Image 1 (cartoon, rainbow, N blue to C red):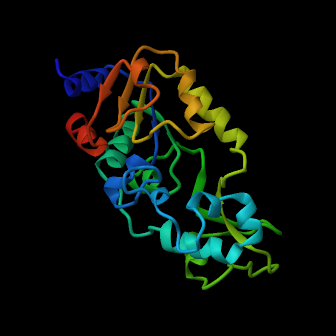
Image 2 (cartoon, rainbow, N blue to C red):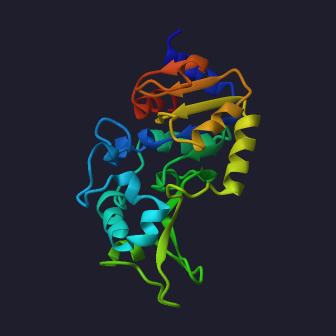
Length: 242
């Protein structure tokens, strides 16, 4: 039995699947990843500092105009559409097989595909809020501002509800993710290098014997996987979820 057939058999026999994904899930939708061969971290930004510096809490606090300019040019992809992986995961949820998507992505593509229970470890660009009064704003509001987006209620800065470097993950989201992962009978990890902590550490809480790893590059979990598939994640899901 080849790996695709085995994965299909495991999915067919499971009703408690959790998916843990990273940037590689969205590259087939035209959104570049961070650390891949053509990822945005491979290049110096036009501002003379590295992208990971710009996307830090300290930089945001002191250089808001550059922060927002960078985000508009490099992180916003409102026209991106879900690919075969997003669509298949949404279908598995509708079938009652997939209990949760735990994602490191901030692009809202799982929700666009129809997934309901999406745990966004790093937040989302599609929710924005005033840091003074807390009023909420859509992505469109931030995207269309020329410089620093300001709240129309109190004049405070409106920022994306994402986890920047130097900021902690949302504890409630982490606790939910831990519960789903630890109770799953099948964990599918896809499109992630598993090098971003603390998010990547959550997969260590899986206790089952159907750990599936779908990733084109090597990860720290390769030796622990019960099934490893080195293919594009969209192609894999196209084959196993009809």
